[in-house]
Image (tube, rainbow, N blue to C red; front, side, top):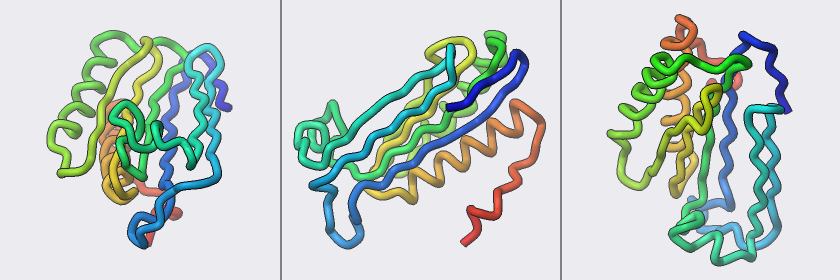
Length: 154
């Protein structure tokens, strides 16, 4: 859970790789439960059960994909419409040129929240897209260079 004061802004992401697709091991048992919350702005709760073939395989679910990610930009004070639309357009430009096998979309469900979601067969393309969007939003929203955390180094 995150809490934002008026005027504060943040970005966060979550990436999930189900199973071991490179080894041919599907996520077929067990479960994953997620809870992301910014009180008054964003609430996401989800549960993925490995035995739920409909969720795992149906086009309205994960469509057989094993990797998913969410990038969230949230503000304690609603973003003005022009700024919000500019940030959305930046992400839409990235989403418009996705490599084959990667699907993504971006939206603003309310004036203080932007959400980019991605789905693919492997985690690497999801991570590349979220890193690119993170860097672009960081520069555009806050005038900060994309200074990758040490944890991202390989």
